Image (tube, rainbow, N blue to C red; front, side, top):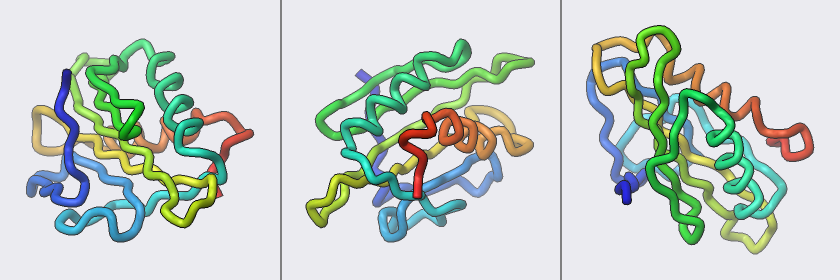
Length: 137
């Protein structure tokens, strides 16, 4: 089974070939590129939908998952040169008792100094693929 990253203690490299989306306050060390939107659905529902969207992508392959902690890790291959990039995803349930959640996604290139925006596009693409019925607020 693949190991999951700890978003709270995540340290990013100095190279510009990563992208991090997370809720405010989750990452105590790393600088976040974009703040996570919220969904007014249970974390289980968003986790299942994210997993379904990742499974539907020809160039993405799940390497490990935990339905209990709502975490997964997958490898995404680039279309042209088939470079492997690593992506960690965690759905974070609301702690106020409401059926709502947020998501943290960290996408990073294995090789190279710059990703030409590929990691940011990948995160954006995944969020856009979620069905309209569970669009973020």
